[in-house]
Image (cartoon, one colour):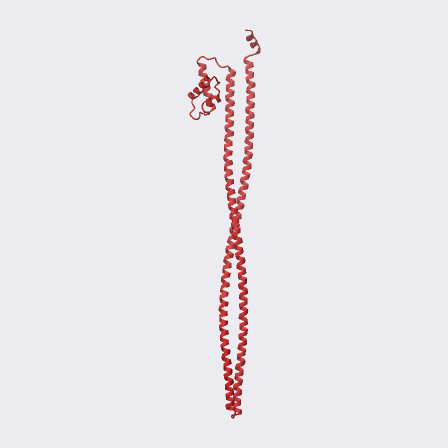
Length: 332
């Protein structure tokens, strides 16, 4: 089938131009004259038709050997073109598959690099989260130590407060004893009442003064104890808040670890895809080698056909012009 608008008139014009230059109008020469366009089979058919037309106008008939030679050359040319077309088609198909494979391999490598970068980022985030967790643990330990110290201080204050209460009870007992002694002195000696009463009042005033001082000291200690209780409550609240923050950070750490595990799983799948693509590439390369062997076998077949054709032509020439006939021709 003609390509690029090749027709018989164009082939005839190209043939005449070649003959005008004194050259032989072969198929390749006509095709070059046409600008490397057109099928060789079509050009060969048009050349045959033009040669037949020239022969019909009074030229001598073409010998049978030349006709067979042209026919065999045409068949060999057509066989070679078909073989080359098949090989070219296979090469084109293999080239497309190779390009597709290279594109898929490149995409897989890009995805692998992306997953590796994501894995590195997740690892850095995990390390940062672990450092924050370690800092939170240290802060928690410090808070626990401070809380223990405050509890011990509270315990010491309670002990001191109990000592003060015992001292106050002792003073109250002394005061009661003094009253009992005063009453006894009143009953025993009325003449010394005024003197004893003054001394007793002085003692009572002294004791009352000491009692007020002790009560004031007790109030101050109670205020200190209240403040310590408030500080303890505040520290406990801060410890609870730190515990909540620590739990929140642990949950974030678990989420980061889960994301890291997912990234590693996706990276493993990409590695499997890469392995499958490499196996496919090896298979395609084997197929290319096999097609090369097929092409070489077809070339050998064409060469064998040409040798058989040469032998057939020799036999035809021998049958068409036997040796005796050739001797008589030379004598004439």
